[in-house]
Image (cartoon, rainbow, N blue to C red; front, side):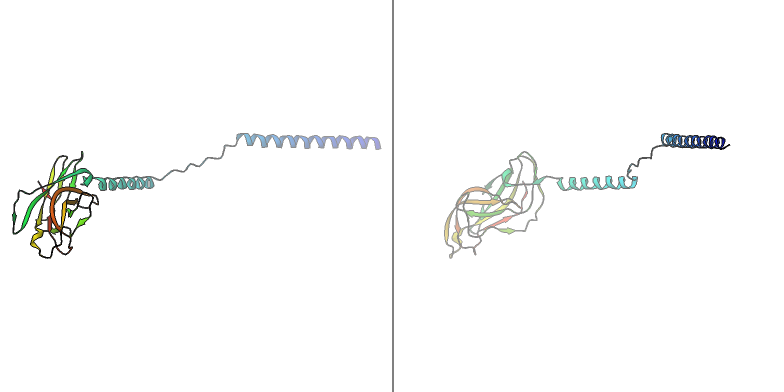
Length: 212
C-alpha cells in the first residue's frame, strides 16, 4: 500500500515538473517573438521652420546688398594714379600770378576727384613745406569730377609775389607740393618761385577742382 502511494506521488511530481517546463519554454518563445516583431524606435531629424529659413535668407541678402552698395562707384583719385602740371597762361594782376593746376588720371580705372588740393611751396620733391600752405578759395563750390583714364580736372591756383611783403623772409622754392583731396601722398610740380618762410604770410590760394 505504501509503495503505491510513493509511485503515485512520483507521477504527480513528474507531471508538475513537465508542466512548469512547458510554461517556461512558452514564455521565452513569446518574449523572443515580441522582440523580433517590435518596430524600431523612430529617429528624430531637426528640420528648420520655413519662417526661420526665410528670415536667414533675407538677412544674408540684405548684408550682401549693403556690402555691394558700399563698394559701388569709383574710388577717390589718389596721387599714385595721377600726374600734375600747371598752366600759367591765365595771366596775373596786382602782383599775383593765376594759373591752372591740372591733375590727370594716369591709371587704368575711373576715379573721383572732389574738393581742394593741399598745395605748398617746397625746396624739392621730398622737401618740407616752406611757409604757409595754400588758403582755400571757396568762391566756386566743390563738385564731383569723374576722371576717366587720361582725363583731367583743374583748379585755380594763385601765387602772390613774395616781393609784395616787406617783412617776408625770402627762401628759394623749387616748386609746388600737391596733395590730392583726402590723400596723404603727394605730387610735385617743378616751378622755381620765391617763398616766404614766415608762416603768417600766405602766398598761395587754391580753388576747388572742376571738370576740364
